[in-house]
Image 1 (spheres, one colour):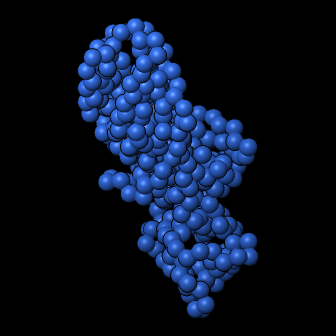
Image 2: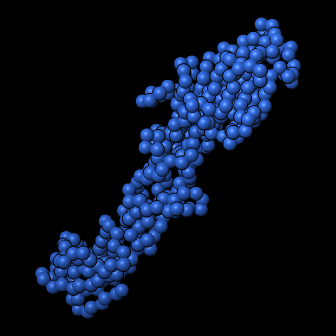
Length: 381
């Protein structure tokens, strides 16, 4: 838009209203004399505000906040009291600078996944859009630099982009996801296996994965081991009596940031496992019929509703030192008996167990040599 006047009049020309290092309007004039003062009125203002004395024939007005699709009014006072006014329609077509996600971490106490990022360096950002997956789905609008969503039993990938007041979107950030830790205990071997997914796009590079454990709540975390891979198999900590909590952490090499996984728990029994460590197969044929070891138990259908290795309740001749342990898939012991007449009926502490796969360990001795039979038992309902 160009305004031209003759004589001692002035003209103002809008030559750009684009985001560069900031948002600006450039004004030009000519054929004026005397002291010059420039005033501006924003859309929400009732009166003009002085921008101060100006020199020469041009002025760049940098705007500190977004004004999209609004009309700005300017007034140039010159020659001791004369003035000329002009207006420009302001629109921004340049997207804001993007910002990458800094950390995606699990807050176990709040049972949520927390995403945080640095603000965009552009001054006209109105909000951030955060989405999951690739391509982005389930977008949500955030007016700060932190976002939390309910934790689910799986890793979630997040991406963000900034939006200015004109609706211009920035580029998408790099994808980043939370750590999801899964642990399982080998109740006979006295070991724990931890597995997790890759953590992606840690700013400044990523260090090793560190696995921590705590014996109870409130958590007091101790380092168990570290690795650059996606799994660890470690001895169960010696001071674990019944259950233990584990959490994974990864840190940025340069940023000093930390991302944490969910807190996973395991319930174990007899983690010293003296019997398991000393047991071995002797001269007895593992396929022998010393014991009745079905692979399924069915509720409400006698005689298939009990797991009893000694159907008569009496040990076979030459067999001693009987003990039956049954564990669920998380490693928690749900049954133990040293009485060969006591059957496992799919109950624990008077309550029915969930259907699914269970593991049994049958310990016994023949001629003073300890044996162990291990197998899977399917509990059907």
